[in-house]
Image (tube, rainbow, N blue to C red; front, side, top):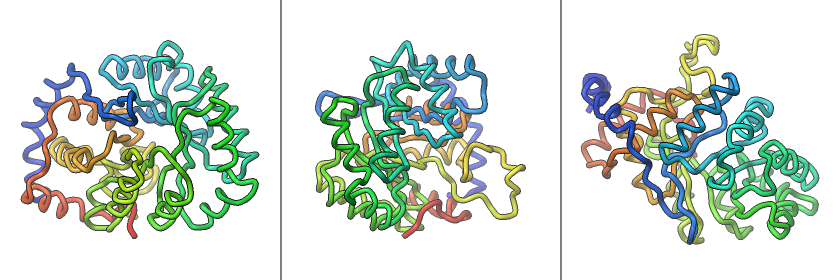
Length: 310
């Protein structure tokens, strides 16, 4: 199926997505006794909008069955944490809150964790993650004496963190970190373009499975890097550093690819329109792609450079 066929099918799929909009999201096991919605609510969604609108969107997502919320202090200089923390007040005890830190030292990670807890008006986060592990140097710093791993392990003993994990932006670094620490989960790109055209993803999935770790997906609806010809000020989705998939049929195929890769859930791009699209599509059945569908999707997304590659 080529790009023209994707676009031609969009109208037919739109009605299906609308009809699914009242459905509740399926859930999958994260760890025994914990089930997460297959689509997560990313904190960037509430950025660049009034608090009232952000709170309305969180309430709507919760009513649709979303119970997995993902955030980080680096998202829009804390705006995501502040607004999502306020919006989640009525639901905090009922949802799974995943947080992250880019700080690689114990002191910095502790400072960010304590600030995160304050912003979310809570005494714990359900999952704390080393954010955007992108190099062997990152791993060295995390594992070194005085590194962030010390804070993670201590915070878990204190009950301020229930589970530990990381988000992976580099395959060799991810494999090394999984071998070095006893972690509960990994959040990594499970994206058809990065996977099929960039060779990034399968090795992390295999390692995580061998370690008994839960797997969560990033960038399921990433088309690829924004073309250099598109000025940052002209981007249709300014909260996304990459170009998301907004065509209904291509998005449905991309989600079918991701959610059939033995993962628990997917975190969509931070634009509210793309999040709504993901929830609508994931509320309906998403069967595994046929070989023909996969070949067509792989060809279509290859128009842009993958967001990640080995």
